[in-house]
Amino acid sequence: EKNYFIFSVYGGIKQSTDPFDYINIGTSNDLINPIKILGTSIESKIKLDKDNYFTIEVAHSISDSLRSSRSPKQLNKTFDINDPQRLAFTFKANGLINEIETRYNGYIEYKGAHFESFNTYNLNNNSFKWGLTIDQNLIQNKIHLNAYFKNEDLISPYFTDSFKNKLVLVGISSSLRFRKLPIITLGFNPTSQLSYFGNHWTVARFYVLNFAASQFYRVHQIAMNSSVMYNNFVSNISGASYIKNNVTVIFTHNIILNKISTFTSLNYNQNSIYKSYQLDQNISFPIKGIAFMTSGLKLNKLIGNDLRVGCYINSTINIKWLGSISIMAAKEYMPISEKGFYTDYTGSIQFTKAFGNSDKYK
Image 1 (cartoon, rainbow, N blue to C red):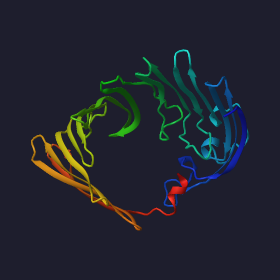
Image 2 (cartoon, rainbow, N blue to C red):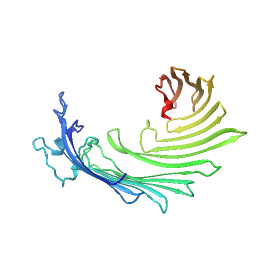
Image 3 (cartoon, one colour):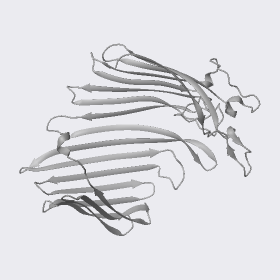
């Protein structure tokens, strides 16, 4: 795509979600006042070379929202370029540094509290965000590294324009692919959000650490695949009913024969509320060339509780000239506390029919 320059004008009426635009607030005749908006935007893309480019967009809007004018008698409908709360700005950069084989993706975004458009929500606060993602390959693409840096400009429509709580989050992931060795992936990903607990708002932080390794191999010409996964979820949420630390370990083993395959999974889960084990064993096989079926058992065990056995079946039946019918039924047990399980019954029937001659599209 070549360089471009786009100038746009937009306008219309939209439903306001701002409490300032409610009429007769506090009465049984509460109404939401639709607001009129008018805006302009300029967007441009500039290529530095074949691998690097950046885009920039600047927009401005006016509206008859009560919040933007602060008074229903003094609606401000003039273009005021000096008012940053009516502006929006976006800068994005993408590219590749060939000398060191590094890809990058960065952005800077600003949205004023009174800026209005048809694809954004007004949060009554100025919003400023930035982020940078870097991808790096090493040793002839055998090692891949990914890292991101971004700020968290946490805002809420329930706070005044002056509310700010800024965080900088750093996440990293990597994968290692060496011949005849397991494929290994590592990752650390933090997130955060505004949450309401008790009678106050707080910043909830979540951290996820994960590790996975998988290996495909053959034993006496039989194809097999084994994998192990570790996941650790940590949060700073307080309260006895919230899971603050969750550790999951999963081991899987798959045997692939000519027409039959088996799958085994052993799961261990531990958190601040309960500990549980689950063994899943299934087998998949065809039936006389017209159907394919998968059936299995799940053994569920809570520490200090009884063993529960669930089951499931999936089948696809192909009927000539009619189509295919997929049937699924399952009885599963999900732990809800250290005291017991929740029993879940699910089932579905799906019919699929393809029309026309598919060969002409090949």
